Image (cartoon, rainbow, N blue to C red; front, side, top):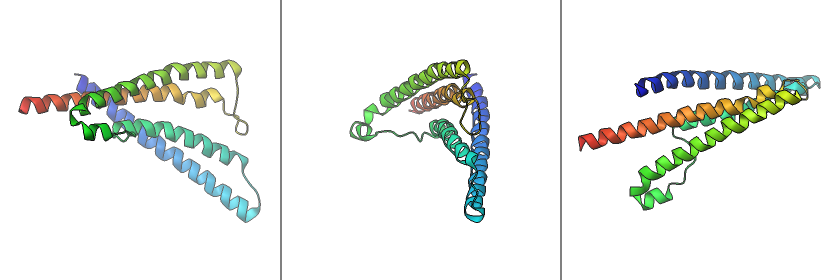
Length: 167
């Protein structure tokens, strides 16, 4: 039951991650390319393109972290696991637990930041995008990180159970 729900969520999140990363990076590349052509070809510059690229970099970083959790590509120190292989499983669960705590903090504090931006009605300087929209990536990514971490924990648990049953 839990496995099918997690598989369904995996398909949705993978689709969302891949397409939003693709579209946002392509839009940023086109804007940056047009800005370079205008700057060096016509001595004119688009002020908004640099702001757009900055926002896309921030957005893709958070989306990329969710994909990194899924692919188990997060930065880890594995020297202790190499020295003491028996600690691999407990350290893996500890690492996942810390990731879930951080995801919970992103949800909570991100929500507070969005509420603050809603109250102050601040906007970006050039494109005048409400900052609440940009800060909304924080709780959204916290939820995605939490789901991805639960998926990784479930995969590890089922692999360990299968390994024990074959022994």
